[in-house]
Each structure stands twice: as C-alpha cells, then as structure tokens.
Amino acid sequence: MRKAAITGSGVFTPSQTITNDELVAAFNAYADRQNAAGAEPPVPHSSAAFITSASGIERRFVLDKEGVLDPDRMYPSLPPRADDQPGVMAEMALDACGKALDMAEVAPGDIQAVLCAASNHERAYPAIAIEIQELLGTSGFAFDMNVACSSATFGIQAAADMIRAGSIDRAIVVNPEICSAHLEWRDRDCHFIFGDVCTALVLEADDLAQGPRFTIESTRCATKFSNNIRNNDGFLRRTRDQMEDRRDMQFMQNGRKVFKEVLPMVSAHIGDHLNAEGVSADELRRLWLHQANKSMNDFIGRKVLGRIPSPEEQPNILQNYANTSSAGSIIAFAQHSDGLSPGDRGLICSFGAGYSVGSVLVTRAGPA
Image (cartoon, rainbow, N blue to C red; front, side, top):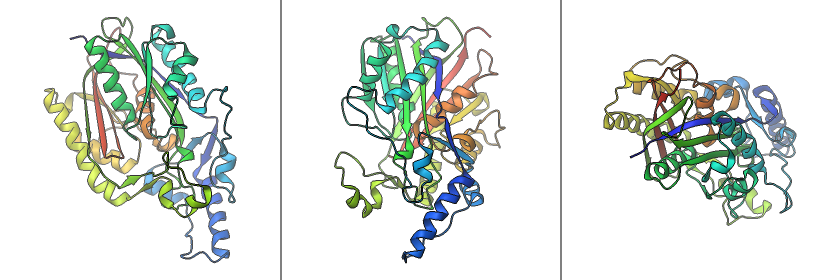
C-alpha cells in the first residue's frame, strides 16, 4: 500500500493583534459599565497576569480588533458578504493554500481533493471547501468536516486514507478558523482564549513527492461524547435578543473537568498509537501538540516522554497565537519542522470538544 506524505504547509496570519493588556482594558471597561448598572452577580475584573498564568497566552491575532475591544460591542464586526463575493474563510484559505502549494511545488490543478476541516464555519452550505476548490482551480472534489479542535488531524487521516487507497494522488487539508466570532468576549473565564488564523497542508502520495517531506507512517483518531466543551449556535440560530439569554450560544467549557478528563485520554491515546507502531517515545524528535493551554501541553509532553520536553522537542506557539482550534498543532508544525534530518520522527496531535483526539506519526524524508 502506498503511503502519503506532507510536502507543503502554509499559514495565514491576520494583520491585527490584541495583547493581553489591550484585552483586559476593554473587558474591565465593560465590567465597570455592567456593575454601574447593577449587574448581579457583579462582573469581576480580569488581568494580564491572570490570563498568562491560566493559559500561557500573551497575545492573539484577530480579523477585527476594533469590534472586540469596543466595551459596548465585545465581538468582531465582520459584515456579511454578497453571494458573488468570496467568503471570509475562503479568502483566508487562498492565502494559506497558496503558500502550501508553493512549498510543495504543486500546481492547483494537480490537487484532487480539498478538505476544509475547521471548528467554526461561516455557513452551512454550499461547502466552504467547494468554494475554495473553485477559487484555487483544483480538480476532483471538496467537502467540509468538523471535529472541533481535532478537525485538522482528522482531515489528515481522511486525506491520507484516500491516498493510501489509491483513489487520489494529492489533497489539501485547510483549516480556516474564525474563532473570534464564536467566543464570548464578555466572560472573564474564557474571554482570552481564542484567536483567528488559517493553516493548510499539501498531502501527496509518497512515491510522487520529490523534495523534502514528512512521510505519514500512521494515523489514529478517537472520540468520546462530552458536554464539557460546547457551542449551541448551530443552524437553529436564535435572534440576538434570544442569544443574550442563552450563554450556551457561544463557546463554553467546564475547564476543570476538561483538564481532568482530556489529559489522561490524550496521553493514553498517544502512548497506544506509538505502541501499536512499535515506536518508543525516545524516538520522537518533536511533538507538535494542539495549542489550547500551556499547562495541558506541558503535562502531556511529560507523560508521553517520561521527562520534561525541551522547547525544541515540544514547540509552543500559544503565547503569540492563542488557541486557534484545529489550526494550532499545524501552526506549530509549519513553523517548527526545520532542524530534523531524514529518518527523524515526530507526532502531530490535536484534541478538543467531542471529546476528540487525533494523532499523526510522521518521518522526515527526502533530501537533507
């Protein structure tokens, strides 16, 4: 059976940044206004020190900074586009996909499948992936998929399986995440978590790839239902007034339960994946983990390797990008895959709502 390989990666990063200090100033101004109006219970202040301690995040990129930082608004202003205009997600995807195709030295017409794998889609249909296919000029077919923060790794498995089976030769897995539009910026416990970004990976049959690449040795996915991370703003959309009465219409999580339940699930998943492939943890030169929370990643890294990973072994981009849902592990991979020699192994892993967890075992191949 042929193998698939990752031959190109690309990251679209918005031009606007919000630092913790800027975010806290806006949130505290909102809290003061609510408390002056008699909010019960009172809205507590946030602080940059609290955010950094709780998450490791220092800043985040967003598509609209002004709307998020307006104490009278506290959510991005992203006006609807006309039907004959490219969607916001498709526009982000064009940038990331273009970079990935250039790295892979692959023409758009040679791509036979586009998988748009993301947590937050701007519409139900037509599929964002088909719009991306049209704008890029790829061949074959395209479809959307959503497994929350694990969408990218599940997308990689789906595309790799198609290549392994011989139904396609090349695919793009693209992850445009507009997390700012689904975050409740008025909730102190989560107002700092997310940012916006888009990532893309080109996958090819290993025998067709000529340059440097990461051969996909195996993939593994798992899910287990949980309500501890949830967003009810689906196709049964309410009016804005109704949404004001439904806190669960935006991102929600029970953080303590998530920590308690997800960490052992992810650590065991990675361990089982490595054991099934006959690979020891000591053979892993790099862990590209989902960028949700620094404490979570530190725990998983120690559990998997049996020691504290070095920053090179377990790169962290959370401090600059915040949690970007499905794109987080792919940003880490795209920005920190240099310095590996042919034969070196690494593992991409993402985890999130569902619960879901996906892992991709890769080996550096091609010219040094």
